[in-house]
Length: 336
Image: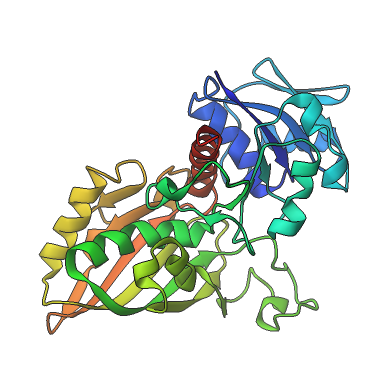
C-alpha cells in the first residue's frame, strides 16, 4: 500500500520530487495527495509541465478547481501560510515533504504534526531535528519515535557516500571540500541587496564564493568524521549540476588506482543507485537529470606522496536530491 505524502512548498525541489515520482514509476509506493503553495495553481501546473533544466514532463498535467491532475491522479492544492491549519489529518498524510526552506527547525516543522501528519521530512539541513539522513549512508538510524527528519543538503548527499567509502577503506584524517555549484534562486540576476555581500552580485556574470555547511554536516551523518571536514562553495553561472572536489589526508599510503577501485566496487555494490562511477570524459551537462546522489569521476583522482588525495564527484543538485527525498520518505514511513 502506497504511503500518502503532501508537499509543502512547490518550488524547485517540490516540483522535482513530484516529477521524480512519476518518471521513476514509483506511484505504487508513494501517493502525493496534496500540494500547499501560495502560488496560483495554473502557474504551478504550467511549471510542472515545462522546466528549463529538466525539459517537458513526459505525462499529462491538468489544472481543475482546487487540484492539479497528474497522469489522471487528482492532487489537492491548497494555499495556506500556517502549516498547522493544513488538512493533513483529513487527508491521512503519512509524511509531509517540507520544501519551503522556511520551516527548517523541529519546532517550526512540527506545525505539520499539529495539522495531523505523522512525519515531516525537511528538504534542507535542519535544526534540532530527530535525525539528519543521507539515504544509502545512514538511513538505518531512523526509528519509530522520529517525527521530524532532515534530508540534509544536495551537497552533503553527494559528499557523504564517497566519504564513507574512502574513510572505511583508507581512513580520512582531515579534508577540505569545494563544491563548484550551479546558481540557485536564492541568488540574483542583477546586483541587489543581500545579507551575503557576494551573493548580492549577479549570479549570471561571476563565479561567487560563499559558505556551505555541507562538509561539516557529514559529521552528523558519519560521526566518525565529525570535525574532520570543512569547505566552501563557488557558485557558477550554470543552471544545474554541480561537482564536489575533496582533498584529504589518507590514513595510509594509497594509489589513485586503489581509490578508484574502492569507489567503483561500492558503486556496483552496497551503494548502487546512490553512488555511481564513471571514467568517461564528461562535463557537467552530461549529469543533468541523473538520479544518483553522487557520480565519482575516476579520471580526476590524484595522489601525491601516497597520502594526499584529491577526488571529484558530480551531482545533479536538483534531481538526485529529489529522488533521495522519495527514498527517505519511504524509509521514514516504514519505521512507524
